[in-house]
Image (cartoon, rainbow, N blue to C red; front, side, top):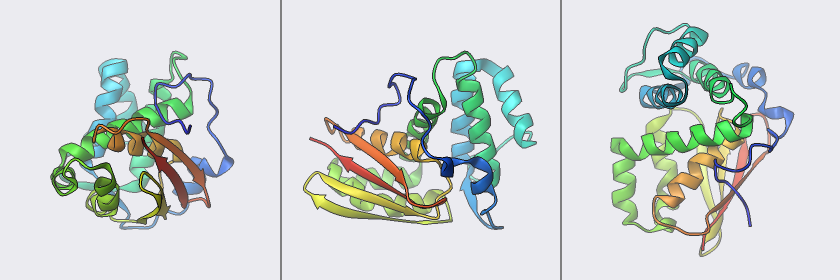
Length: 208
């Protein structure tokens, strides 16, 4: 069974070297943005774990005083905030990079589902896991303005989510996709990501 729970034992390793932040940042171009909702969600998770001091450290790391929910900000800023948040979440040895990225991905899923695009996704899916996965690419487009996502089915409850030119680490999307699947009450959820290139990844998903 594939695994994806962000609560997995924190002895997992980050994966391959293509997850390296500097390589991803080098491929950002002007106009690649992320909605402010996801910045605020990341900071909220840091606040829950490390308090306001942790939030201030994250804001200092990206040299931004604040974020607004409905604004769009450069994806490079989000990548740096994401890594700063990972440092905060692993500060006391409670987990490693992979574990923290999956937690942040799960939080991003919650933020997506609470957005207008997420509510539309839930409505269109009618509580059916397969429908939700099929509508996922359009929900991503409402959250970020870069990259392409598609779903290839390999069975009634099994398929692959292919992401092209997406800047987030595989572990982040493992957490996000698992949380989205679980939001439909799916059982036995499994998500396993694989990096195809610096910005391209493939995620095998299944549920019972």
